[in-house]
Amino acid sequence: MDNNVLLSIYKYVIEKGDMGICVVDTEGKLLIYNKKMRELEGVNEDEYEERRAIEIIDFEIEKSDIFKVLSSETPVLHVKKTYWNKKNQEVTYISNIYPLHYEGVLIGAVEFARDITQLEYMMYQPLRRYGAPLTFDIITAVSAVMKDVIEKAKIVALSRMPVVLIGESGTGIDMVAEGIHHDLKVQNDMFIALICRRDEQTVLNQFEKYIVEKERITFFAERIEYLSLEAQEKIVELFNNHPNHQHVLIASVGKDPIDLIQKQELSKKLYRLFSGITIYVPPLRERKEDMMPFIDDYFKRHRESFGSTIQGLSEEVQETFLKYDWPGNLKELEVLLDEITSLITNETIVESHMLPVHFKWKIQSTCEETENEVSTSDLFVIKNQQDIRPLDVYMKEVEEYYISKALDFHQGNISKTAAALGIRRQSLQYRVKNYRLNKKSENID
Image 1 (cartoon, one colour):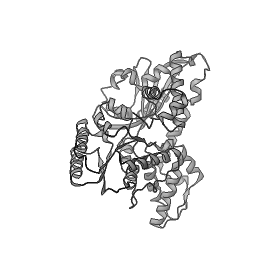
Image 2 (cartoon, helix red, strand yellow):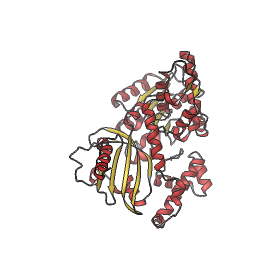
Image 3 (spheres, rainbow, N blue to C red):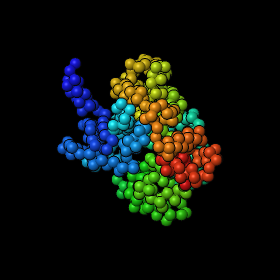
Image 4 (cartoon, rainbow, N blue to C red):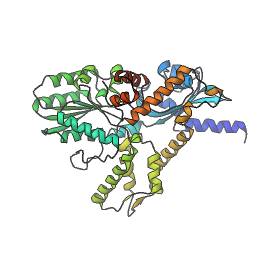
């Protein structure tokens, strides 16, 4: 086939594909910026013509992931970004960025962005209640990290201290919050969820009304960082002005509270109100062993409610589920199971052909990305001259990887990890904050 024809096909596929693609050279000059990426970034057709990537996508030099890839020649993978684009639209996507080499020489970087904005909105919906109180016994968690979450939550319930729950949407944070409410030794009268993504004046009115009228309320402020700093401090003021009440305050945030404070998205006064008590609820991709108990419980309830005969997943489907990264966490899994079971008749096992087409496509896209990934062990192996990096860059990568793995083994516990590494707790906290490790510590001061 003629090269010009092939080039036309490549251009068509890149422009019409539903994955954002951005390619820059080593100086940040824009080479490819397809339609989907322009939509994600909110950039008009005319706006990106003959302009540098730095000007269009706000490189912010030291903070940009593309810049990091160009500097280190190391991929940056599975980065979840939520922000307001240039059209004031809130978008969320998962990004993989790879260095581009030609004949062993770095020539640029390419970013592939998978749009999960609608999925993210869906994940803000709570997991199904099934018409029963959400106690800790209902939470189907078998992983060590989730057992630790529940143990800490029970201690919070015993002390009635305000607590911050940290984690992504759809992880079941709302279940943990309600579990705390039902585990209180002296039961509260009501559990009120304040959805902070909505109109903040409505949230404040609800809080002000119930904190005055009732004596024992469990308030759960979901994603409290979406409130303005003024609204957050108003909550602190209302809470402190009623010292004799027996209210319990629980809040959730989607990111490290220290990072949110630095970005002026979380009030220092509010964070101090929680006395530094935080519980990190890990995403499903970090605790895949919780997936099958959740699915088994779902099918059990489906059989009881609808008289179905569905029992479980085929080995092939189970393997597929375990390979997927589940950016929407348990909520995404629940919605997928809803879609699958809505079409079953007398089936007992979910086979591959029963999976929705859109999910099969996502699985295929994820597998293709995985095949392009560089294994972690390869990051520290020198195979040729191009693998040689400045010593300080190499040592920083090694240290970051080593600390990340140490935190993994100790479920994010700063004190235990610091003791294992033989360094001071404050020193480890500084490094975690400095590297912005994906797996944040649970004990953040």
